[in-house]
Length: 290
Image 1 (tube, rainbow, N blue to C red):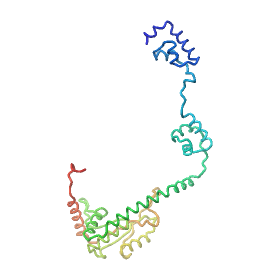
Image 2: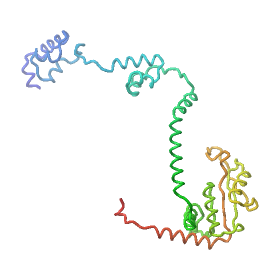
Image 3: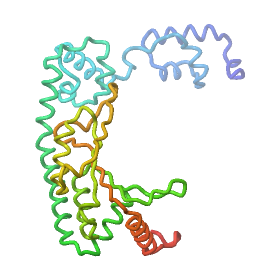
Image 4: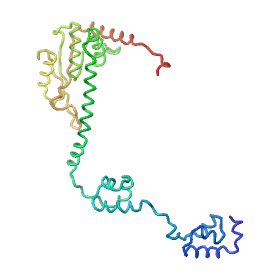
């Protein structure tokens, strides 16, 4: 750059000429050709501080959209409405109008939520219909259960939900706890399959203190076909004020506990059968998995 500057006798004089031409409205290219300065760095120094003439500025294609967006916002339109009107992104609209006051809410939050819910309702109905169709098809595919299938199902069910013996705490007794009526029905059917007599089956309830324990006991007694006399003392769970519970309402009936008296041998059969199930599962080498 220095060597090229030396080509000019008086830089300041050259700068005066460049500024004068700039103020006459010439572009950089015209000034470069007029003064024969072809080094951009030198040309920048010559024109430093001088704004380009208006005619050389490139128009911003979005200037009119920005102005229109601001007009619409001042008229009270939302981002969604402006987007529909102008066809531009919400991020651009937000950038253009974020300094303007928000329009007054024309609907309450409840009204807006209700409108949104109605808009989604047909979609939710279709989704629910598809969901139920899959469930019906799967249920029909099960068909009738053989005694062997019920036996294996019951063993797996107990091993997932029942109490289990531990080396550090010997508990060779059968106790099953669940809140799902379907699970309880399958388990009691499994006990029937194993000829566990009714007199060896005892029941109790675990339920939150804010629920209707008496109604829950009657419900479970009817489900398992037992007399209320077979039910032991109900365990009430204390309610924590800061806890927001989801299991509330008439459908909440707590957990039913089913215990089998004198069940050490039955427990050992269950554990042995579970080991047999695990052993019967084919082991696939890790390297052959796809």
